[in-house]
Image (tube, rainbow, N blue to C red):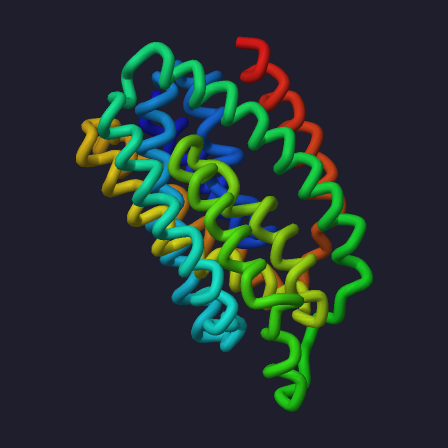
Length: 263
């Protein structure tokens, strides 16, 4: 019975990631901890690889639709991947199952979820004002950040958060992109967010796997549901109203974040 529940949870999260760009981590990690009783360090490690393979499926679909701005993806990755490697080194030195590390993970995860809830609300309000398409002539200007250092700095912050908690590459990343690239249309912002999360979560996920904090059997069940889910969501991304979805998600994430902070 649990097997089917894992597959259904994977499908639901994959669908939402494809539709909105909200990270698998902000949804799947609390689901694993609260509903399935998975230990925090195993939930984070497993969810990182879940997010990597789920978003890889979404990136393939979005690339075929020519929605991914690769220049933006490269700028964010240049900051996030070194930060992820540094965070993994710290975790390797201390040990992910250490009670103090577990406490830091759950508290940081709670704060990250509260930030994600706020970011989701911001995006729901801001998203309505953004164009849905971009003329080719405006591509260069739209993929130019406000300042070249900002994607590196925000990428580093998100890389650290993602490696510690598996949360941050979704709504927080989308909000950062909205601020840095105000001319980019909403579907392309979501596409950039999904694509740059792939190398980051792969690096962080395999780093956690080397520490023994990945449940491979659980990962397979989650992916069996999420890959069809994100494929469907990414096909609907350009024609689905998302403000109601984001409003409900914000409430759920705020609830989960508050609960984790108070653990």
